[in-house]
Length: 175
Length: 106
Image 1 (cartoon, each protein chain N blue to C red):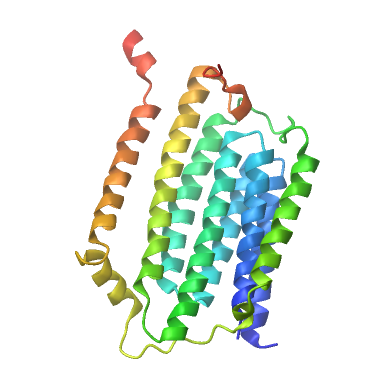
Image 2 (cartoon, helix red, strand yellow):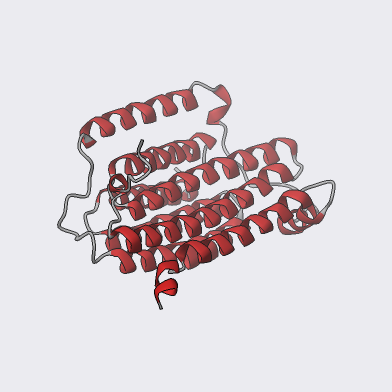
């Protein structure tokens, strides 16, 4: 086993264990903190896939923004649903069994394909830089300029919608 | 080096864990967190296949490299709107339990 495989197994184990803790731990704030560990593990997996740009984006967007506003939302709403209440729906054992069956089916489908055991080797793309290609592709009208601009529109819509939905309209009318 | 299947197995396990959380948990915030786990699993898959395809052809495959960015943008928009809805529901109804929000039930 090479060092890279050892690192992969270590990181994947941390990622999956903290993901299990995210969905099973009783305290919601702790779930959000374990989510940060999971996202960090996924960022390291991106590094192992030589997608360093996405590792940086993962840390900036997921850990820096999404995890933080999730923690904000938990702190704003935690006085309603105490941590000692039951956190799982009825029949969670049945869901656990069916999700495990789903996972077994997924993994057996993965291994039914012969190309799947090929190793990922270091990329040998001489003279091509990931980031430069990505930037040119995102701004090239024949490439991804339209989805890129639409994504910025989507983010603008989400921003305005988030502010509008979160605004206290009732409180404004009474004051 | 690392086989392609290892990444796919990790992604499948992460997706299943996220699906379990999204179905089982009561708190709407934890449901959103579970959806984030599922989206992360999808991104691992996309980047693993991007790497595989690039090493096969020797050319940088831009299609696979752009797609995770779109997924991340969609995830950011989704979590912003989702948390705004959760906070609005919390203000109006004093609950964050997804099954208790049932005014639109027919």
